[in-house]
Length: 256
Image (tube, rainbow, N blue to C red; front, side, top):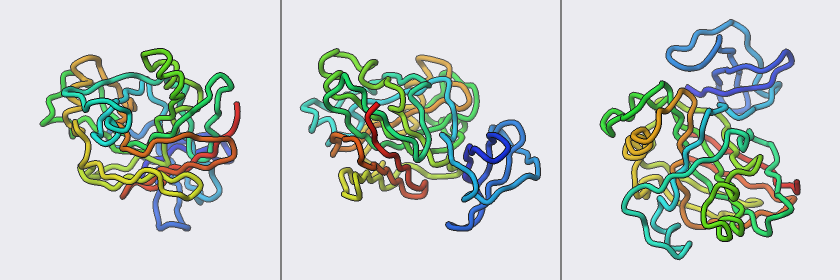
């Protein structure tokens, strides 16, 4: 099932996306998509709506240096345990929205990532039970002001600017995410090309690690890390992240 959030002629709604590419239909979900969703009966051609970020999380947990090749390109060792940090909910934008480059940064990078969406309140989840608390998966771009990250020695400012967390195009349920291709292109040129099987700390390990620290709520998002090939964005470009079975998340780039 593909769960999306759309703007339609009468407002905003959660929907499921049904049908084949080019003829998809958005079917309105009553209330929220957690648990077993119910439907209102309203539907629209997806082409007549606008896709928004599929979820507005209370928090976004991110994992740094979780692909060995990315750790190496940053001149660092792969960590023995997950390195986690947070992005604010205000950094979230949806498909097609512009990543805005802040004037005070001289280098802003793309980082294509697989994102885990939590489906229920949970804490202290053992890795063996992680699948029970996952609603599904979406695509993320962990946009980073690289010069600010290096200058600050910690990552809050560099990762937290408005528009620095594109999510979408939808949440896909029932996916086995342990070995999916992940590819980032910039103006059509491939920049990142890897597989989620290359994660140092796999998805169940990350759910266990994060949930030992804090309670996770429905809709919270865990970004699992980016592979090698990160690089700078400039105004006027278009960046796309494609993950096998999940679709493609595309965003334009503009000066703030």
